Length: 220
Image (cartoon, rainbow, N blue to C red; front, side, top):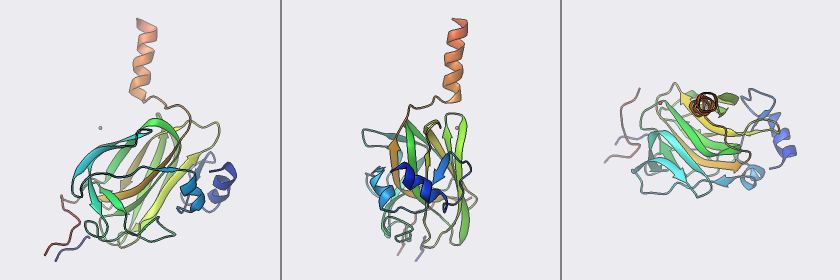
């Protein structure tokens, strides 16, 4: 067989213990506790296992992925995850990159909070980085060492008042492919145009994009 394998006070308090925060106006959330779950909306992964998708939507928010993601269920399609308090559940639906080591998540609305759980393809500990942007500006970054064997961790952050809303997140790792799960968000602010859109608007006012493809399944 082959096996692959809230409130402002709340966010301020957890920032003191949170890993990887790069700015004072970007607060990281280390674990999916009750306050985080209550203050965010979960974007459900719908579709058949082993099918692929390039976006997720619940009517209020659409997340567009830069690479097609494969839907897998734990433990049938993706063997291991992690358990509370590190994750919401040890049997989530995950989205696998199918090999690429980086994916960009673009949001249809500006967000005040965004989070997801992640785990690499390979067994062992590998660094995963999530970089949060508001338009062209980086507003925060989270890097955590994640064990590919039952070690999924949360990558979540919130921007404070006066900081532009989160418009996209770039997720990358040196481990090769990886899976993400439990995408959660809170809408806030107005979406910031990407650099190309800003340039187009300015012009108008002035002048007239390791591992080969393999499924995480048990093969008899």
